[in-house]
Image (cartoon, rainbow, N blue to C red):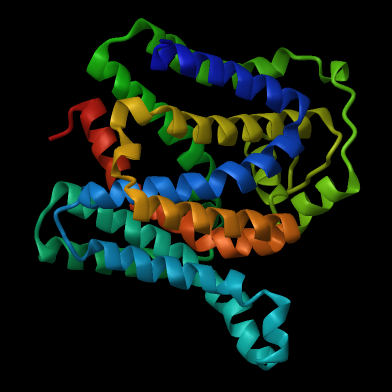
Length: 329
């Protein structure tokens, strides 16, 4: 039987090669196909681990925050224009959305409080800190970039995947695990030296429309800006630097999903899937897949609650992992 580290070695190589050949197609497919199943199964596993916090009420903070976070997306559906006036829809899609980043910060800070402190006093302090900090900085570019864009995307799917892998190495001292971490770090760097003329890209109008209409390109534009490629936010489908950024994004997302599904023998997340849970999870997954197939935007909106809630639910595990890696007390 192939070991989990050898399997992940193959998955890393496979993810990178596919990302090189199908940067946009692969991302859109993996986000729609693997993404929802990952959200649902990981949330179920975290739930059975009591959310990795001592505070039994913390889960309600996540549920409420995820619902509020999802409202601007839900009310952007054309369906509501027949039921509600324009000002009501505008409140959710244009006004409320300005403050949703506060929810991510609050859940993150409360997760840190739950990991380091056990009292409700610490929780109240974290709430006051979040409120003050957010109202002070919520309109600044760096606040929006880190909390609104990078935290639920690249930090979640790439940075924390690497940290989980490093934590695994610290536990088992596996040489193949070290190779895998090195690969995940070095393969994106290798893009600086790869000649993309070899691939002769041709993206269909449907692929380009789905990518732009769902604002996925905002991440590309901001990463390009961070790396100093453009002075402001720009995005092009066929510019080589934009293609390399997209290859990195597609690689990070696909391997993030495949890494999770490969870890059944390590963390045993599948063992918590009894018959009832399996039916529910797969039923929801099929519904979301059908929504994505019918209209990609509809699928994304219907899955946004599951997506952002699983990011939030993972915060305590992220904090615990960092503590264990650096042996923080």
